[in-house]
Length: 230
Ligand SMILES: [Zn+2]
Image (cartoon, rainbow, N blue to C red; front, side):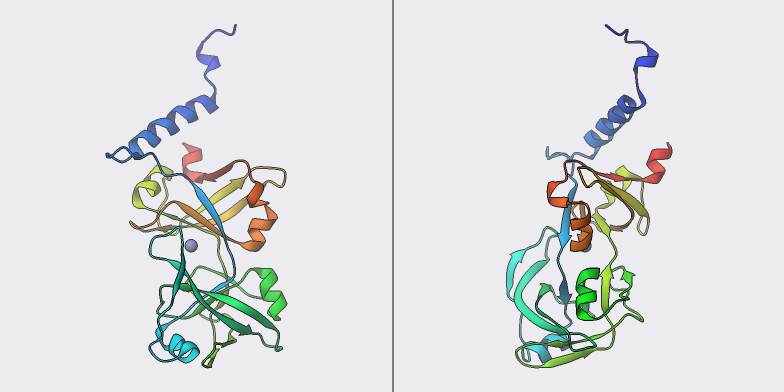
């Protein structure tokens, strides 16, 4: 039997102990456990503004929530639109996600964008659509020309302030996401988005999810550079 001396306490064990302590501290007073890291693939979708919803579905139309999403208040709507690219290529049944936004925006995986004839869609954080490509959007009641707003959403992690403290990160920081398994991948640029209402949750697009076989992934770890240096 190995002696339980100083050398036997590995770095991994120390890290585990620290993690346990911090995890316990994170647990809320009413006995709920720490937040579990949840990673979701986000299929292509559209966020729509009031003005565009009026054109696409008729004045005063309200979105019909069909499925609640993991982030509270967000939902997949029953409404879909047809997306028309620059060479008249089409993506049908593009799902609208609610609630309404200030600005319309379309989030595509790179494969979707290429299919649509857009081979240089920039990677952007949601809302940062300046200078991005546009497209035509067709709904049952009308058509909208978006002059910009088609993006590949940058991979990001939603978290609340306590979770940000746990990872030692702040708004706008970039973390790594290690996805284990036979097609293991480390993603280097996971943007931190902090909001008190958020649940710990990584959003990646369908290309990224396919690349790491997310549905088969055995272990997934969110890594803060700063924390690793301690
Ligand atoms: Zn998100």
